[in-house]
Amino acid sequence: MNSIHILRKGSLVLLGLLFSASLWAHGGAAGTDTDQCKFELEPTHWLHYTAYQPNAFPAEDFCANIPRANELTLLVFDYQDIKYRNMSVEFEVTKEPEGTSVFKLPAAKHKKGSVELRLPNGVPEAGNYLIHITLVPDSGDRLDAHMSFKAGGGQAVTRNNMLLYALFAFAGLYVLYLSHAGFKSKVDEIIAKIKS
Image (cartoon, rainbow, N blue to C red):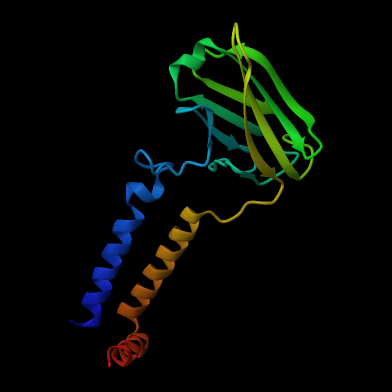
């Protein structure tokens, strides 16, 4: 098997993995869900959360790490159960560990199944924050759920971006391999040494 054939097969495998739905999905099959952007309000009843900073990062969504403080921030919650549309739900964001409230949306019923918290100035400073979601039933006990996030750490390179950078680097090296005889001979020499 020659090295060009190996490189072609390797690039096809890499492309197959890159565009695999399971790599890009938020979650997985039952029992293997890896979605870190959701709250379990009650056993097996979930609320999905996504954060946006549309002025600074118009094409990005965030979860546990929000890049900037003092920046328009949208926190969007989607009910994954219809039953919560008929329940009053209260939202609050607090600075931790102090517990200082930075935003509060009083209890209300959200019939659309989606709630957007608009923080015009985002959170006031870099640090750790906690989102409190409280179910306020017509009768019975209140039910609290919490999710933490960190703000103001800058935008980290995501795993998806890393995969894209690796793909472009690999594609560039492959084009160089095909178009430059000197580079091709060096690569072929290295591959021959590895094989022996």
